[in-house]
Image 1 (cartoon, rainbow, N blue to C red):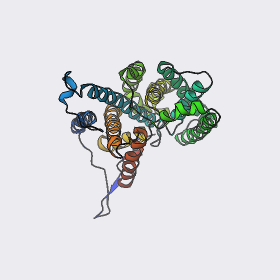
Image 2: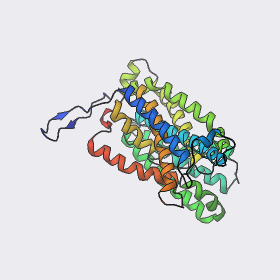
Image 3: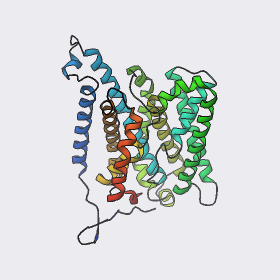
Image 4: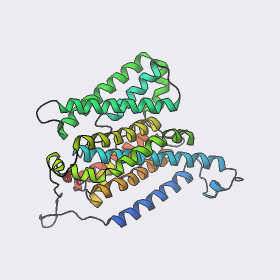
Length: 346
């Protein structure tokens, strides 16, 4: 499949024109600055305002609170970057602009696996949760691809989306069924289910860091593979690519990133869908630029959503999974309305 540019229509003349792109260096600088600003706000803003000096001044009375917020911020950065990077890889891998770990059933598979582990096997340690979530995400990804591969045309983007939606509905129903008959598991699971990074220390991130690091390395090193696969399988094979192996490697990267992020913070929606669209509209569809910039954008979105959730309904706190959707839906609708998603490039 050859890539095509997305055209915008001039409101005055009605003439179609190519969308304006920002330079990659400029977008990189802006996103790095946004990451720094989001981190500063995440530490300072909350039920109680904390000066940045409290971070490194161990004698400051608010030092312990600042350290807790720093750890929370680091977890938000990791989860946001992982989800956005997984979404960007998945969209390129399936050539489907609507693909993300949530829509293709990966998050639902991880959630169902965790509920079964809690209810049936009594798993309670976070270290075990990461493995369980990874296994559930992997099984869901394989099932979606197997179901979508049935038929003459194989796993087309449309069939992948339909199979993912069906598996998501099924896994969500099974999860609800287990929770309805096991009240104790529901009490444990419901706080995790809405998606949260609050109340979790650095030890939580350290458990998932190796999985995230391997997934990110596989994803970023696969940028050229994704650019080649975007040309279509036939042409990619003509260029010497082993497309089946490439898809497996990139699929493992998505499962590692999405499964681990879901285990650490719960299912956080829209990050893997919205961020790659926004970045693609700014710098185009070259995955060597799209992937790292999507990771930066996802980190910004999750950290800002978490910070906003602390102040929007004081003294209560709105979890990051809810705030990410609140922020993500209007942004996604704006991108669609103004044709800036660059989806036609897939």
